[in-house]
Length: 181
Image (tube, rainbow, N blue to C red):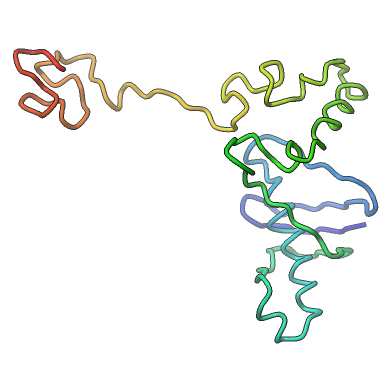
């Protein structure tokens, strides 16, 4: 077992966890729930630090520096390979899973053996409207229009209803007589 006690990296609050070795473990949860803090900033950071300690100082000075995570105990770790979460290519939805086609098989597996059973693998795809979040379209970030930031509905155009620079009376986008270009 990989034993974690009192993990406090980033937003983790004294997390205790035992993870089985020799099996695939998936961390899932909503944004901000601590998945990355646990996997990257705690487990991978400590495993990387422990591995670097096995090298002579000359080699250690040329390796990436791993800061030790805040935790009471981290034991049972072995060397890790860290694949970061940054996008690959131009699309924000391109990940290691999509580029290697591993995600295709995972979607199929989830659709066939998952509970509740949905039967269609596209229900697990953030690239398909059936599987993507309706708020952010599968991009992980919602874009909302804040009209209060650029428009005051209690004012007329002449009184400065448009709050953007250059739209004031006499501004470069203002043509006079209450009309805006």
